[in-house]
Each structure stands twice: as C-alpha cells, then as structure tokens.
Image (cartoon, rainbow, N blue to C red; front, side, top):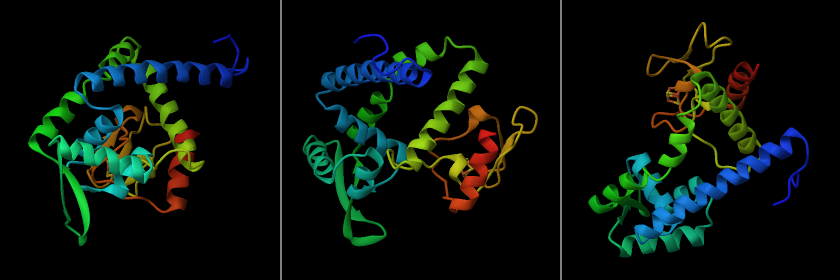
Amino acid sequence: MSEGVYGEQATGRVTHGLLRLSTAMRSHAWEWAYGAQLTPTQVEILVLLVQRKGPMRLGEIARETALTAATTSDAVSTLEHKGLIEKRRAIDDGRAIAVCLTARGRTTAKRALQWPHFLSKALDTLPDDELVTFYRTLLKTIRQLEVQEQMPAHRMCLSCVHFEASKKPKITPHRCALLRLSMGDADLRLDCSVFEEADPLTQKKSWKIFTT
Ligand code: SF4
C-alpha cells in the first residue's frame, strides 16, 4: 500500500498503523483457529463465553461480538455440533435459550486465550509509562467508537456506577467503591464481571475527569 494513502496527517498515519496491526491479528487469529479446526468467529465466541463465566443468550453474543444474528446462530450451531458448547434454558426466562461451554469447550477457549501472545510480547518491550499512555489512548478511542455506535459498549470502569475518577491518578488513584480498590490508569478494567452501568450524566462526568 502506498505511503500516505490514509492522509499525511497524524490521524491518517495512526489509522494506517492500526490497520497494519489488525492485519497481523487477523492472520494470527486465522492461523490459530485453523490449527484448532475452528473459524476466528467460533474462537471469539468461545473466548467470550469463558470470559463471562456463565451462560449467554444468542442476542447477547451477537451484540458483544458485533456479529449478525444469522452468523451468530450458525457459529453457535457448529460449536454445539463439535461438542464445545451446549444449549440450555436461560435461568431468568425459561422460554429463552442460553449457551454455555462444555468441559472440552472451556479447555479450547482457555487455549485460545494464548493466540494474541505475539502482541503481548511486542507490547512488553515498551517502557511502563508508554504502555500506560497507550492504554489510556485505547480506552479513549474505544469510548469514542462506542459513542459513535461503531462498537458495542464495554463493561469498563469508566462507564461504571461504582467508579470514582481521579483528576491526578499518579498522585491520588481512582477508586472502585464496590470492590474498595485503588486503581491507577493501568488497573482500569475493560470487561468487569461486577460492572453496573452508570447513568449517562455520571458516565460523562467520569470521562471528562479522565480525559482532562
Ligand atoms: S465494579 Fe468493576 S467496572 Fe465498576 S468500578 Fe469496580 S472494578 Fe471497575
């Protein structure tokens, strides 16, 4: 691809860099999935189920993975056929169906958590302060994509009702009132199992403090 194809400004160069990263990630994801006789979509669903530690409905899986209902349903049926997940009645609604991992599915999902290792290894070479700045930038970019409805909402600290943002996290850490945790920027969670969504005004306030 020619230099500057996404523009000569920083935005264009960062966009180009992120797209190159996504190419490397897609290639590694396919390689791992192919070795496990799965597709990257099926791997993503297994990993989501192991992260959530419990049954999920099809609609929830589709929302979290940004897949269509039809693609989700196909992938889930294949995973069920392979004996990696099973369907059950949802706990909170006997008419609805939820899916969960079988023991074999859990083992495969835990192995699948290793495929992004190549990326962690590269990130590990960065100095701590650069890594924290990178994480802050990622969080802000994810938030912006959520606001633009280009990405599903994350169960992250900055959008959580229990979060108390600090203006100077290096001096006074952020706080999680629920877990009574002090948190630096690098400790902020992107997918927390006890997350509770804050109202829009509270979220806006937390993000404002975080970004100023
Ligand atoms: S409950 Fe979880 S998401 Fe909410 S502030 Fe605490 S650690 Fe963060």
